[in-house]
Image (cartoon, rainbow, N blue to C red; front, side, top):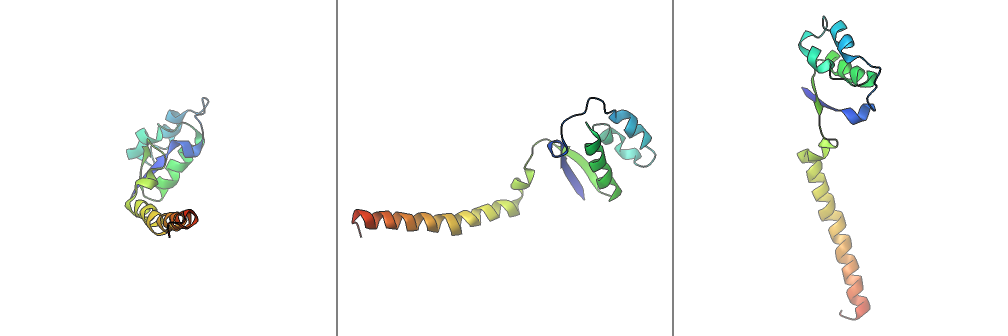
Length: 104
């Protein structure tokens, strides 16, 4: 399973962190992912990559945060909430407004 990680979840870049040296030391365990490991900008990002690799997942960095919102199930949930919660409330308030104005 492919996992998408967001850089912003793991804090800002650490200027003293040397990702290439860490990636080279881990090359014997994860030789196919040395280039991905070298892109980590701090130790928390490196730890997140290693956790995913140890679980057997492929990993990559996502460019945009909140990518989970684009998932169809989440988008459908927002649509259902708007349809069954917001729309009835708006209709109810509109009917109250009409009653106050004497249209009903």
